[in-house]
Length: 256
Image (cartoon, rainbow, N blue to C red; front, side, top):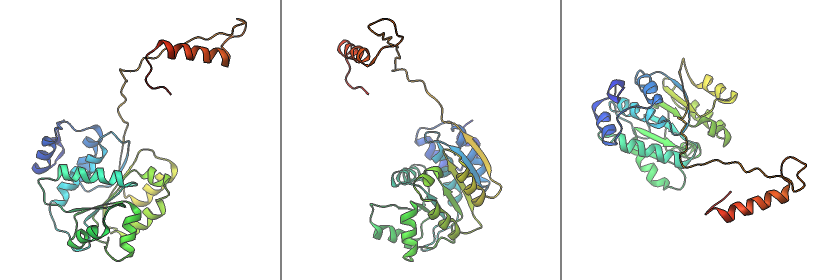
């Protein structure tokens, strides 16, 4: 299967090719056609599975038609940290280079005035952490009732960081006539409850991160005996002596 089999437009396909990708990952192959259909998604996928492109690529295609209004973003992506939000922003830069879409990052550590200027022009894509988003909303700087695509990414990390009340409030502020894409690396009961609350007849997708065998790691076992030879296994004294001998005989640069 190639990206051209997934229903993506020519502009996105050219950008994907320019980035050096030829075949979609499992989650991309499963999610992209569903997103293009306008259906909600409940995705269980870890970092490293190609998850981010599974929603950014079809979003670029969907947002290619239409125009944002001042202070009213057309799509919203929630991330638990500024670093993850920045990574998603880079995805839109890479894959959206053949489209004239406006995006804004609402994260801490960046100029709020610059963020407000872009919001005033009407962003197509708003990528935000919950705190900064609600801060600007409460200041009357943006409206969220025109959001047509809502992405809640890394939901289990949102839970761990105590952001769920903020997320619930944000969801209540966006349009009910929306498409929601919900991703989490794990699916505990609380996350499942939120998914049931936010999603309508979602397509469930579960993809495990491909496991790789480290070729640079060699395992070995050292048998340590007590000096008296009567008890199995060595004591602390014997183990320390064995460790000293190992460190002296091997060119160890770092150890844990």
